[in-house]
Length: 245
Length: 245
DNA sequence: CTCAAGGGTATACAGTTGTATACTTCCCAG
DNA sequence: CTGGGAAGTATACAACTGTATACCCTTGAG
Image (cartoon, rainbow over the protein chains, first blue to last red):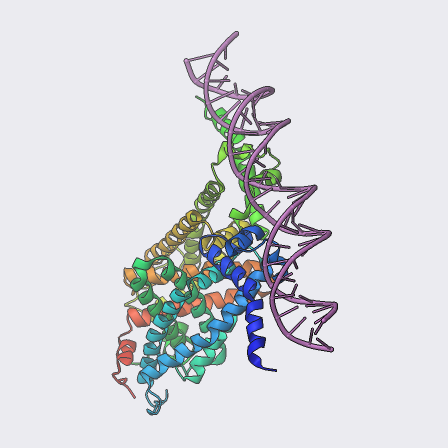
């Protein structure tokens, strides 16, 4: 009952699957949708017999789902780690944190700095997982309903993770859960979209990165003032003239 | 040199082209990418001989570009009209408008109301042009570089129109041009994305519409406070404790 | 030792695809 | 009246596609 031969076998067994999935990623990254991929073309790229495909997948959609599943399992935790890493670089563990009530200004500043770090780490991460991101974003609005649904879930989960981290790291403690979810959803939508631009336009990376950061900060700021501690702004929007001056 | 026979001829002549373009839109809306469409399949759907395709287009990409071109020429002006319509419903023509300096609160309130109207009109518009929107959003991240580039331009133009209208209608006079452009870009990205959800999930339309509105308002608010007249917020973010209390 | 099963291969076949060539209509400019 | 060009059709063909059937190794459990 040694675990080594078992896992070795599994590795050997999964070889064809791996090759096919890699081939699919490679081909989709070179400007093709996954459904436009031929069974044979795929096998050719993987250096396998066409029929071998059937040993592992029933359809191309199933291949796509397998890729997405693997992709997310590899991406989710690292991304959470990125956020923690960013938060720690701003507030090192052990150092006493400030609460929103005590010092709102410092709290917002902290959120801004974490945003700065996270945006950059995220975009770099996208760059390192180029092909996976390209296919993910393409199929999110792509032709196959099954893949679309799966990727929608990926996005939802990503947003949920993000909201969760923001809460745990106490980055925006003044926002209620519903608002936090909305904002996280919008931020993740934008970030994935921008990640695509970031990948595709190497010469614009600095600009895109800055825009992304500014955008996220803008959203956070707007949310805090509109739906968090924004009594003043709320009153202003409702027509009551400002109190001071 | 009568214009009627000429245009009649042109109409008759363009019949095949029309049929092919309509067929393409119909098929793409039914869950397929445009590049995955076969020449013959297209002709079949249009009720034409396969070879007739070549009389009008050199490639499928060219068909796609033709559709996009037509689409934008039909969509751009109506959308601008929507914004004006929304602005007039808030500040009827003839009625004296307020300036930002005189009454900032009322000015923001105006922007919020116009947003409310515009978002709803836009989403309805998307619903009425269902197939065009579906294909546009799909191909924006799709496989064909030519279509992607064309649709990117569509988005850019849309954002530019939006920024222009906001300026002309004096909805956010406190923002500088660069900021306005950034925000308009983000808003249009989100709006197209959400339009897709709006189309695909009929039972969620009310929710999506509200979220979209809230999101846009949040972005505007954040931008005004972060990059417009947000001295107080800027100081807060930089670490200076708030003045009052 | 055996044998069943999983991964991989070879060959075959019918259906589809993109494209080429050649033919027909129709319309309008000269 | 006529000739040419634009729009559409018919037929043909080689290349490729998805699948089906049958065969081959390797492997690990009984």
